[in-house]
Image (cartoon, rainbow, N blue to C red):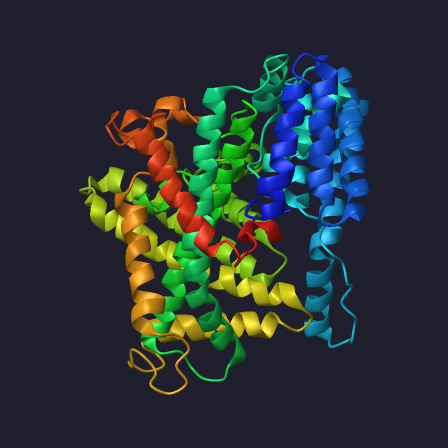
Length: 509
């Protein structure tokens, strides 16, 4: 069930809100159980056969966590911790990477191994990481004696279940407990609805429109029918760079808005990453909860920067390679992670050189442009990874698309800007204008958190410096008729394009 669908917006979400309100005076466990059942219904809408996977995962990890918390510092507790982590990652590897392993062995040995047909359960990457973090925190003594229904709601709460953010038990469970007997709130409803509509606008109007340029051009590059021109290659790259921005930003807004309707704040997951002045800054702004997980549960346990510069670079590269593999079962995703690992190593080395040699800082506009260009180039193999995920033997298509677009971008396939024969897109209307508009929006307009600053819509905003949130200005949202008119205009624009429903990019992870 997609956030940008009639069934979610007009049926499921209103029923969930009405049921939650009617149960506001019921015992706490009853309202929690209602939200759990609603979330499981939401999850099972796509394929109810996968309900046993998430149910078994929750039951296994809950009881492992309880045992670990009661046996901290003992061999038995550590054995259960290791068993739990291995079991979680093993199941994730089976569903997500069995096909990649089979195709890779086939490519190397030509043994004719059939690639297994395994349908990836929705959200398995997200709820697996959440529960691995829970087990590790139980070993560290950072969990409490939660009721099983509380734990189920922490894992399955539908706004964050399918594609994140990757929530932490210490963030969510106290909020659910504070909501006991409170019911719905008019302020939360207006804030949540506004953020939900902003997210819909980003996804339906902006991201899906940009995909009409990116998709045919990437398909042409993957097919090998002809080389892309330099203009087509840049149009494909920039269109997808903006498409994934508005797609993921829109999803994050819809998740935050849906949760806020129930009075729940989800953690901040997206904060103008294309305004980043470095790759380090980019990963503080893009998929913030994944960056936090990789830092706290992988990079720091590997040693972080505590064992010298050389070890830090190895840890950075290892973390980003595994982060790329988490995003998708394909070598192009690993290439994407490796590129970002390389970028981070260069970034840290540059900082070290700057301190040692007292180099002047790069002007902010230039730093933003260089960072954006590096990120855009890395998105090429990431987008091409879709072809690896489609069917056996599509690894060649992914690599062909990556090579073709990179070569064409830098003139290795000629310097024609647009092809006069076999034109895939209309340059003026299907590429240039949406790209220019998208760049103006991401670089010069406030993001959703800044627009809604007065009401701190997401967790973690209070930790941001004022310079990143901006001063309180007249354009920041308030529950007035003027802002109601603005939201209705966005809703009208969404309604015009709503019939062309597109899935969120991060749903495949």
